[in-house]
Length: 218
Length: 146
Image (cartoon, rainbow over all chains, first blue to last red):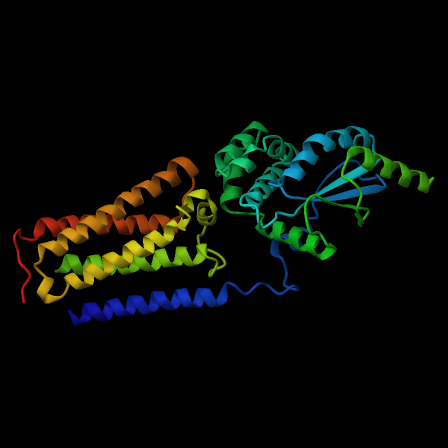
């Protein structure tokens, strides 16, 4: 009997010690100068739309769960794509900035990155914003995201492996840190050729901005 | 007696696992060591809470209750007490039912596996079998000895 209690105490001490060690170690945030493994390794700076030779680039910091981002993506972005991006006047860069207050925005961002791995980032981006009811219901969107992934033609086995392995977590974190470093406070936030854009986020305003910048260059 | 000892030992391990998941849920631990599983996904889902309380905390409470009763049942005066066996079986049955519900959610709703949750489910299932065996093995009508 005594040996049993010794064993019990040993298990309690080892297990408790491991929990205590974990609690001391984990909350420490990485130093700001600490390397970000995936992000720095692949030097990834966001998916882009449009010509590489376009002289104007807009960087958008966005959150897939944010209703304003969804509204922008579904109402304004199609016009911007048609009138500015497809015509070679503008290049668009998408950066993730999942807000901590949103429950599934990181998960959605990972889904888009995993789709990007198979060359379907923008297709998944569009689906996540078009079928935005997932962000309102509060229900776990895993099944819906898989359906969307299937809908855009992803290999689901590869998608599942990517999601389960949380392959792009560091890339996401790098994007957030980059956004914080340039002063992003909310979503969507825009930067035009690296400078903060403070105008309204409408297609008309972007068109006027691109026109004025193009004229200046001429 | 050996069954109760096994039950107590397993319950202690279950308590540690549940505490680990609960500490993660409340933000004390930054990351779950999950290998290739989907622990963080499961823990971030809406099903990781019930009535606003993390399900891991229900696990902590359940395992703590089982541990307390199991340790009491190891004392000579309660060794042959059928009421202890009943109490253990009742607590373990509730825990086992809760485990079945959570495992069902993982497999059929979330379609994701949290290895730590599965570890806890395996422990609770074994504890349930042990408690039922203990109940069947304890003679009926046994009064507590003094």
